[in-house]
Image (cartoon, rainbow, N blue to C red; front, side):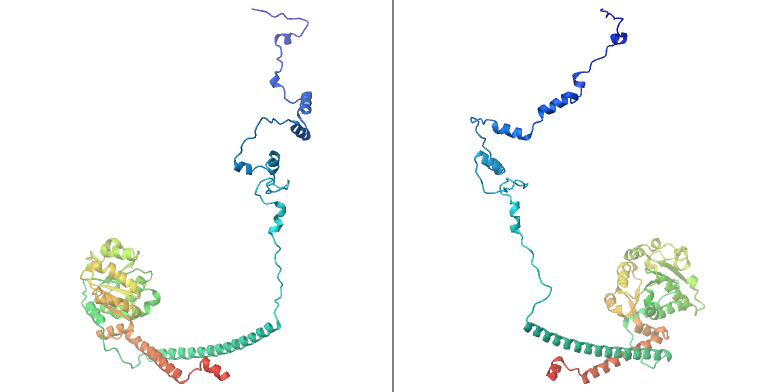
Length: 439
């Protein structure tokens, strides 16, 4: 083992633990005088570089490489001239252009030749005196025609307004006269339609131990006409002490039917409305709800409008399916609603009759179902309601207001006849005759 001798005259710490000298890699690359020498040695002006390139002798023994045509087309023209390719005559010769030297590029200095100044139009229209005369004549002709059309339109508007006022007064007067006199001595219905007679026979055959299901599918706005048509049927059911269960696929139908039955049962002391009627409420789902009712009525409607068990009440205790009802009566103003009941519920009724009370305007669309036997009878409009009351020997709302309908129809017929006669006597001259008279 070698031991290092320590000189007592020097620093002992520096002899025991000598400091390491910095390595060459630890020194900064550009520091002090070395940095200045590097800058002066390596940095040369561009002019010196260009002179060095020009002074460099070309080696004639090296042959130029063969470039493909597409690469030669991209070479600048200056470089082509230096290699002996010659001037091609295309490309931008302006050294400041970004496309300088590229063959086939448009020259930036010649772009002005592709544009022209926009044409300036004058604000005034230049016409000749002859054209101005023609224009004035045309304006005079159009002005005369316009004033004549306005005068004719004013006359027609005044005459039409007066005619409407007279027609309205006659209609209102006839209706008020029939209402105030309570009954005008007009002809009462003597011919009874076959659907009305069959409806009367089916309702008359209902017994007190079998309930009747009524579908009140109507809107509140059209309930006035339907009440006049259905009032005689409901009175007959109440007089025969037939239990009634009613529902509706509209929001207001069951409520209006409850109020109607309450009003009609007030005059009968034997019919107890709270015991003999059941309000099944609103049936949702449209045609799907009707199909569910026809398949399983107890599962479709479990409680009534009072949130009580509907099928445990006395009128519906013996009803297990839709065919256990004595009859199904649909009251609606819409032919489509009647068609839904016929198509979805009629196949499940079996021998149970289906009756429809409908508005007069929808009766023609219901006639094919009656002819095919899918509907056993129907009452259409106020006239059929009056005929039904005539069969029962009573005078109800349909018969009372039937005179008002007859008076209104009579006034309309008289107005049509008088208007036709006036149009035959007083003829309006045609445009051709008017033009000949002016000439």
